[in-house]
Image (cartoon, rainbow, N blue to C red; front, side, top):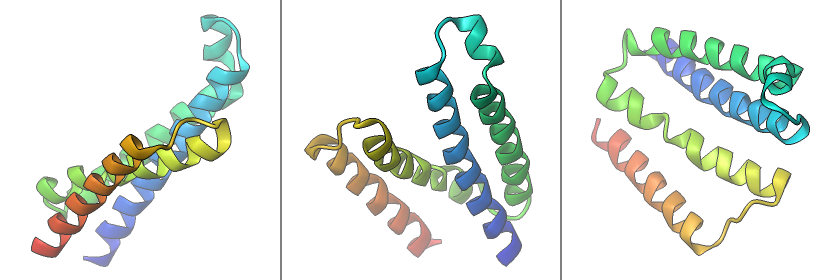
Length: 112
């Protein structure tokens, strides 16, 4: 059961990386057509594709009721990265949301 959880963690990590790459592409590229041709955008989409493959591997053995909510961990990581990379807000509302997600994930995995 170790390998499916490694695949799930890899999928979550690549999903986070894909999100950061897409945001970087959006921030540095004017115009929609140029955005589609930006290397960061292309790499971000490819990274999402790789994340999807790892996710498929993980849900072969991990119940979807565990695997899919676990992807919410990416919301927490992306919010923190966005705060430091792009100075996006990370105030009490965001921290409360992060705490709720964290609590939900802990409850989910402890009860599984």
